[in-house]
Length: 407
Ligand code: F6P
Image 1 (cartoon, rainbow, N blue to C red):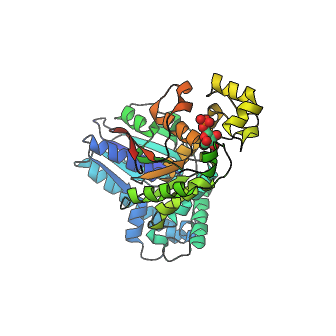
Image 2: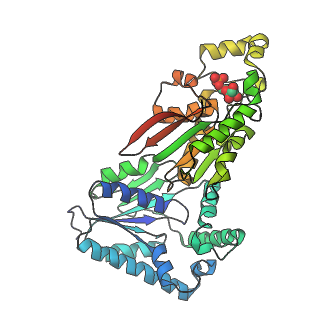
Image 3: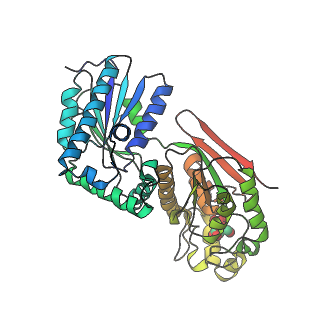
């Protein structure tokens, strides 16, 4: 009978590239900080230590490859045993970080770890773009160094297919929780008996995690000079100088991910930042494209007021809820920007610093996510082109600063 004296086994479940390790690390980082003795037992790490041949080839994960399957089973058995030994001593929370997608494997875990409660956390993410981006990230790991990027991508995709073939999602398995790792949402909970620290764990699973976000607006554009909205204008000389000043300001600061929109002005703003940063990944997201002005795209505010007074009036009355004919409003923009934030946070989960280079309306929508402004105030948040917002939002730290990078 499992004792319930605060010790716990957390067992991750899910296909590769679904955010399991990110969740495991987030739990460990927080719970350790709170004084718990937490340790992760990762089958991938052990595989890299134990397997002398090439275990990055997809065939190593083919269930029909009995030799490799036996080796993988051995690795799992060793890690389960290590977790049990550690928990028998000073350990309090052991996290088994591996796929555990078959019921047979989960039964084995349950049958071996009988001394304390076991909580299964299943990580799901069905966003095809994100899974693909996560696989691309994996292919950059040192273990894929000997393969070309395309070959590594194909090999990892095939590996995922092998796991899909044996994947048995939870049905009624006790002490299991299913998490949508993109949206940080609990999809299902099956907890017939009390699990130690459950409230704490659950809260961590649903909380956004922003270690350090630099939110920048693109520099001055030709359209900005004319007070023209939308379009795909380029930076002016002053805008280019702002881009250079931004890069100079952040010289020496590691920023593993820079997210932009797909518009020329945000990409141009990112260019000097990327110049001396071969390790930085640039990710343009259409979710961060500027508000679509519909029939008013490319017009100046003055032209809109003169030729379409009903638009100017509608915006003046209720700027948040007003939707441009054939375009968007802040109210509709919010949903896609929110999706962009989730994507950016998911992809950059392990990174300390990230940067988003966006637009006026988009940055207002991003900020409102962290600032909890009343909706009617969101379309008026001040978004300068020579300053950036530094946002930190974790369980232990909340920071919000406006910093200047150019006069
Ligand atoms: O003027 C620059 C711009 O980014 C336009 O493309 C966009 O329509 C506008 O800002 C959004 O700001 P507002 O909602 O205040 O018009």
